[in-house]
Image (cartoon, rainbow, N blue to C red; front, side):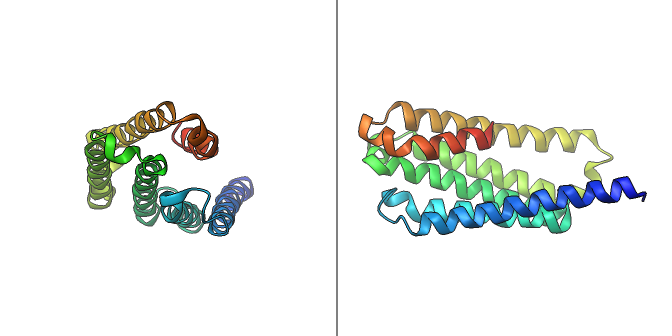
Length: 176
């Protein structure tokens, strides 16, 4: 390993560590604003904290490690649950019946992705089909999350949109 690659690796790990710290600070900030997001409050805190754990795992073990992949799946599941709970902010979770099956299907796909990643990680570099399958599952979760996010924001009342603006923007940027 030459000096340039060592410095580059340190910079990447430092970036991941800063991201982890920022996510944990955001979780603490959300903790102090209990009434702002109603029933989604706890789910948003958990999702922000798990995003910090994922970034911390990336800083410590690298992006290609099994620990980072497992933390990524936990993070994605937490954000899907937080998105579902945001539908309950203005009571639309009961009126929008297709939301629950869609969220459950996306959660199932994320679990499949995690299982494939953990089970077949040693073979993924040498087998293109495994990589493409995992990537397809990842894209399904991302696109499904963006569709749910679009439905959340576009169907919200003007008062709810005012509160949902920042979480919706953050999730859109996160998944894009």
